[in-house]
Image 1: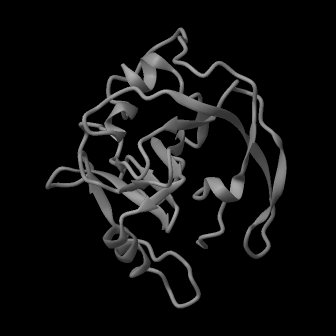
Image 2: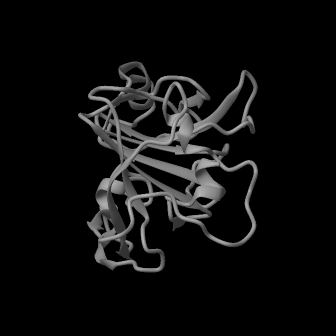
Length: 203
């Protein structure tokens, strides 16, 4: 699996600005008490102000070489699927907290992708975006040791080698904000959801 797969890279999939409310929103329906909580991105935990909102693009897949297809139109199923959060300039960033370990020693998330300014974390043990929650982060300066550990398991042609991906814990610094914002998106079973949802990600 190449690092140019849009399932693993929000920067490859892409997103477009949208005029939407820059505040927490309420949705009806069930709530998973074990969903990752975005206030854990910060220490101490907080709900930041929202700087900008976006909708992600669709993707037209093919079986060819990377990037495995082309960008489609804007997906409008949800009013917002990508969100800029205000941060302090260079503020430390941590994984959204989830108290469901995936391995021993308090590990809660598996790094599916890491680059200098981008990070993708799955809240499960599998090298896929199709099982459970997956967090996408851009505009983040990824912690150098975490990036080095991820790159150590790449093959010589830049492909990700399974079974050697790094994992992270709650309250483990994963990077710093690249300026005064960090950009987030969240999927569940591969579907992008609204990161502004109060009951799902913040409460």
